[in-house]
Structure formats: structure tokens, C-alpha cells
Length: 136
Image 1 (cartoon, one colour):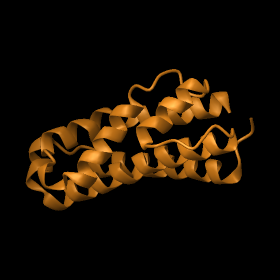
Image 2: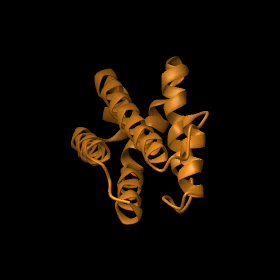
Image 3: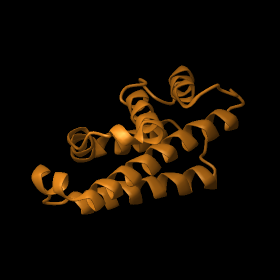
């Protein structure tokens, strides 16, 4: 299946957001991060948008395949696995759960968890992109 222009643009946008996140945090220690509310807020927002892009792509691919609708973002990830587009729902289901937390439980975002995800999981977004590129 060839990707349509919308999915291709969203994959490019995902790359841009991941690069932005890496630039924001390049050389930033946790102590610096923890002391900088603006950096935390920016990081949280970039992660949220990147995860929203993953969800959008999942829902669009499901629609293109005529395999929807799905009831939730988590169900969309699971459907991509069922369709053979993704190998596994891990770590993408965790992304969706994290997105839900920062959107709905925003007052309790732990800077340590935020920093850990932002510094240690940007490769998950790239893996998602690569899986989509490879199978579609």
C-alpha cells in the first residue's frame, strides 16, 4: 500500500517534532530540566503533539485499509498490529497512555518521568516511522 500525501506529511512532521525535542534537551541535565518550568512545559507539549501524530497516522491507515472505525487511540494501535503494519503494540500503547496522562492528569506530570521519556524514547517515534515506511 502506498502512503497517501497526508500520511507522508504527518511522518515528516513527526520527524520534525522528534528533532525539536532532541534539540531542546541536548546537553540538558535532569537538574537543569527540573528547575526550568518552561523547558518542562515545552517538552510536555512536543511529546503530546508527537504522540497525537502517531495516533493520527494510525487512524488514517486504518481508514485507508477500510478496517475501522476503532473506539480509542489504544485500539487504533492494536488494529495496526492486527493489520500487520506494526510488529507489536509496544511501545506505542505506552505512548498513548502517557499522552492520556499529560492531557487528562496534567497537574501530576512528574518531571523525572517526563525527562526520562524525552531523553530515552525518541527512538520509539523513529521506529514507528520506520515500521510504517517498511510495511506501507
